[in-house]
Length: 166
Image (cartoon, rainbow, N blue to C red; front, side, top):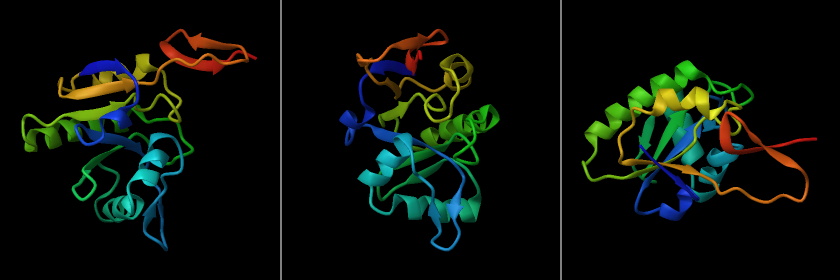
């Protein structure tokens, strides 16, 4: 796994995005809830991805899925969007992603955010030991630090993750 600073969306078309998701589906519309973070960004970029994911979750459960039409991989980090990221589920998703990568052409590249550290409310020091086994074809993206007009401090467990110091 390679670490870089920047937006994974800048590599759209050259790297397959890996989208952190949850397992909640709106039952009447069979639509996965993709309301925040990178999942919401993906929902805005890829028409009907929430419906495609929702149907797969209803049929197979909360697992890693490759969405061929969109050329996107979804990677569950929690069961409910309100919960913190589930470390056991991230471990399961990492194993499923490794198995999926083994079925893809060897020269395929992937773009992945620091799963579980944003809306998942986990520190990178909790997540990194789980996902470190991913191959160097997976590029892990960290957004650049932004200077804020109000006081923010760095998370000591995750340099680069800022929180409001007030």
